[in-house]
Amino acid sequence: MSKQPSSYLSSKLEGRPKANGSGNGIYSLEPINKGELVAVFGGVVYEWDAFIHLSDRDRSLCIQVEDRHFLVPRPIGEGDYVNHSCNPNAGLSGQIGLVAMRDIKIGEEVCFDYAMCDTMPYDEFECGCGHANCRGKVGGNDWQKPELQKKYAGFFSPHVQRRIDAQRAEHRAFERAASSAKVGGFASAAPTPVYK
Ligand SMILES: [Zn+2]
Image 1 (tube, rainbow, N blue to C red):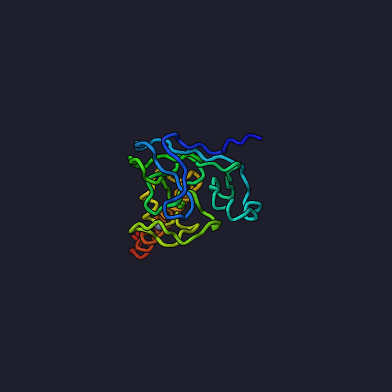
Image 2: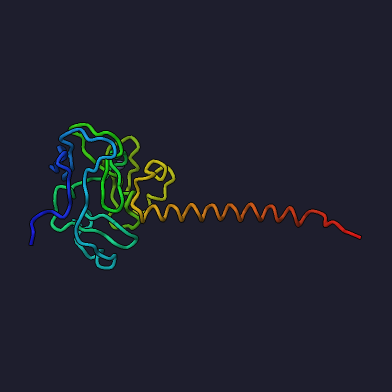
């Protein structure tokens, strides 16, 4: 069996332990331009029912790729060390690609926001990203937050984007129904013309 990691990490980055000792991260070795591909995740896909029985480590290293499907790295590589941040410099391109959301300088840790791919409660944690806008707890429903939907427009995984689109369509349908009920109410209250 090949020892090559299932993920790809751009040669402009390296995976290494974080300076504060809290695990690993990926760091830029060269400047990276906005839009540039930094990593592509790979591995084995598990359905939810099997996935929830995997180890904590497997679950924390995976990426959710569909409503009930999860990609777990086999074998693990540096490209799987990408951490969450509430103020990320990278976002998703499709289900498994990671691209720079802005220009990234040498030495920066490259992170994305797990709200871009997560819709299930499989890896909820207290966030220690340290940014002023840190939301504290990272959970499976964070994609529903309007401010995050706006901030990460174009960087959500397709399955999350479908949910956002469905939520918006539902909201619009509700608004239409509410406004037509109003118009109907006024119409029925209006005097009915009588023709002789
Ligand atoms: Zn945070």
